Length: 386
Ligand SMILES: *Cc1c(COP(=O)(O)O)cnc(C)c1O
Image (tube, rainbow, N blue to C red):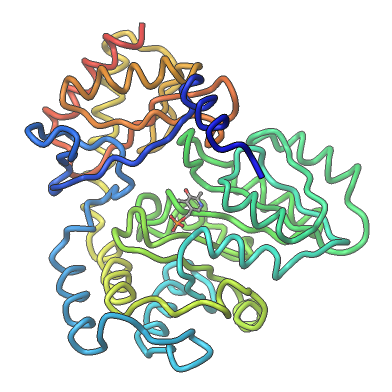
């Protein structure tokens, strides 16, 4: 057992201690913290990229499901918690991802820690990008398979490792399409080429891409046209889709297997009806309203142009997630504090979420932000980042 007091003190001194900050009011991309109830902050920390969490279609769908089916689903899917609504949602996701079927999970964390151990075990190999999300990493660890981590987005390194280590059996390659803390994009077409050449299974986590990329919001998988080359297209409803829960899409066989083997699916209560209904409304909405996506991308481009025009020369990446590398945890917290004084809520992302020495401010642009909000953020960043 760790020495709690000692551990907490050490974290406090190093700027690594995390704490909760309750929000007492929120809406339209703004929030008010309990610690500072007289001030409204612009939220640059949200993953609700398309502003769907407050969209009337999601709220109405949730209300209706709540009155028809109640607050909870009452049991696991394989017991009596399996609503037709869950199947409607899974069919919609399968269509969005261009796969035969899909399966929903309680959350993205549960999906990754359920799917990976269902597919690989002690004598198998996993090739995982070094910057993969903690839920992927934990899924890999839980599986007991041999974990080989390749340098971030470095397919030469992956190929080298595949040549060197790939034995019998089918290894699993797992990546994200848009990386959650760096906002950069994986070379998906080349990955598909590699996985085919080496006979591997490919799993792609589209947590930050679904809804934001692709003509129908189907993510980088759709944008790159590689649906058939991706064996497992995983993602969450909790980010651009404005709801909660997660999914994986794949072949009919894969889905039948996972619903028999993924323990986080089997041994957990089905998603509440209101949540499943909101997610379904969101999946429909992102296909019906490409203008939402376009509006978001215009805002992202505006933010990056403001920064470049102001002389900021570091790479700003291809997505709605824009990291500003600071280095030390304490200095990052200080900068987040300065931004808060100017009315902006930004998370200081620190180890262990990111590697040691790479603490950063992580900005996310959402459809809520006005041109004035974005200009204000760019101006403040230019001041604190030199
Ligand atoms: C957020 C996230 C998850 C976890 O999804 P939740 O639904 O929030 O549990 C998984 N993978 C990636 C890449 C994420 O960013």
